[in-house]
Length: 110
Image 1 (tube, rainbow, N blue to C red):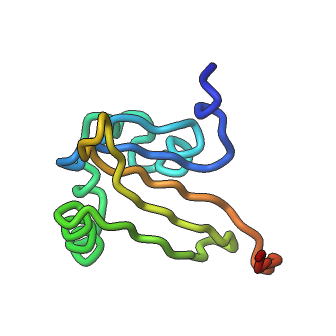
Image 2 (cartoon, rainbow, N blue to C red):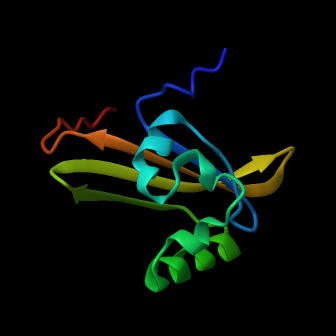
C-alpha cells in the first residue's frame, strides 16, 4: 500500500547531505517548475536562496526542527521540516507542506 503517493500534502525526503530521495505526487506538482520528480537525486540545498540555504545547513548540522506557516498565491500552508531516523541513526530530513485554512479552530485539551 503506497498511501503517501497521492496524499494531499507535499512530502519530500532527503538524506543527511540534502540529496532528495523521495517525493510524492503533491511535492512533484509543487516543484514542477523546478523539475518535479527529476529533482530526486539532486541536492535540495541547491534549490534554495542563500538565506534559506544557510538556515537549512544549520538545521542539518544541529538536527533541529523548523515549523512555520506561509502564504503564497492565496494559499496558506503549514511547513514542518524535521530530521528522520533509521534504526536510531539520523538519516536526513522530511518536509511536510500542508495546505491549511486561513482561519481554523484551535482546541486546548486537558
